[in-house]
Amino acid sequence: MSSPTFPAARAARSRRVRLVALLAVLGPGLVSGFADNDAGGITTYSLVGIQFGYQLLWVILASGVALFFTQELGARLGLATGKGMTALIRERFGVRWVAFVVLAMLVANLGTTVAEFAGIGAALDLFGVPVPVSAAVSAVAVVVLIGWGSFGRVQYLFVAVGVAVSAAYAISAVLAKPDWGQAVHSLFIPSGTLTTAYWLAVVGTVGTTITPWGQGFIQAYVVDKRLDEHDLAGERLDVGLGSFLTNLIAGFIIVACAATLWANGETTITDAAQAAKALAPFAGPAAEVLFAVGLLAASLLGLGVVPLTSAYSTCEAFGWELGVDWGWRDAPAFYGLLAFFVGFAAVFVLIPGLPLLQVMFLSQVLNGLLLPFILVFVMVLSGDRALLGPLASGRLLLAVGWAITLALAAMSILLVVTTLAPVG
Image (cartoon, rainbow, N blue to C red; front, side, top):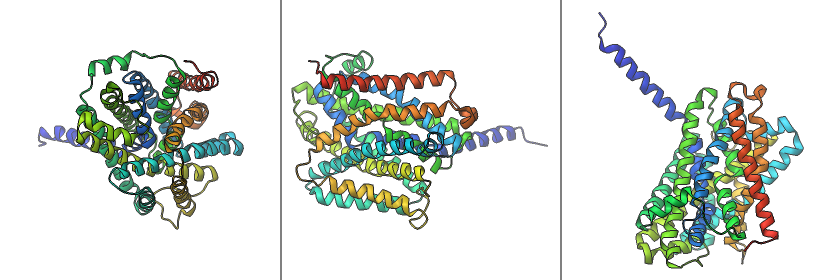
């Protein structure tokens, strides 16, 4: 005779199996989200907090919502087709268009990768490590770790670094003792004077949150992890967590700088490393160290993810073997491109007199300008039922996606107009 506890035990086992299956899906959205808060992002958020206080927190909320929808689109394309973004663009739109997309992404990614080296150099310089040494060591370390690791180990490493960055900036914000009431008000109520600097900061903030490389990365990562349409629910949770955490940490960085430097009239800081130093008198030495450690960890994560995206996109476009589960002999083009992109940026950052702050910030603005072009391709592909089947976007998702794309395009046009004819 069957025990009455058996059905309950089977149900418990079933729930555990579903939970394990769900956890196995997590990764692409979290890593992509964590990597958005890289050196360029931290520099941008720091400058925004220093120059505008709490005023631009509404941009963090708006870009977080937009990030979820755009990343969900990329993940769904990968789940439905088993192909990366540039591979789909080549098949659907031809070689000329995929060449344009890859070239645009590589230009933006170069600026972003240089920004990662600049962030590593600035963070380690606070501890007395020369920039050439930090650039050489970090370049070799990233290529070796990705080249010698399996997919699982690489993913766990990325997520662990992302968690460390998140903790560092969350604690920094608490130590800064901000006006949380003002922060929450600014989160929901836009404010500020609409000057050229204001719009440049808005586009830079959006450009470091929603990036061209982020669209290519999450789709390629979903494919590399061998997820399929059955993993849609788990991947949506993954993307949601990644979007929430990346913008939460961005908000913490702005709040930390607004509560200390901006509140005390320190608005001439030129980079995140200087911001870390300047935090000490107002929030204590612990805040300085945490801010610097966060910058270092975030830069290392970005240095792993952004060149990896460049290698993914280029190999997809040309149909070459790719993926971190392949060895160097099995995917020589993939690893060769990865090493080239990392090495070239490492040498580039050592150019004497290179204005690193401008490179870091403008790379984020460039991301914001290029993103609408990338999203047009993503939107057209996402509505193709012959390609995606049941995972194709419905009317509501298409409407939201196109609205986001048009809003980003309008923002880019506004930036150009205000730059040519400055306001205020």
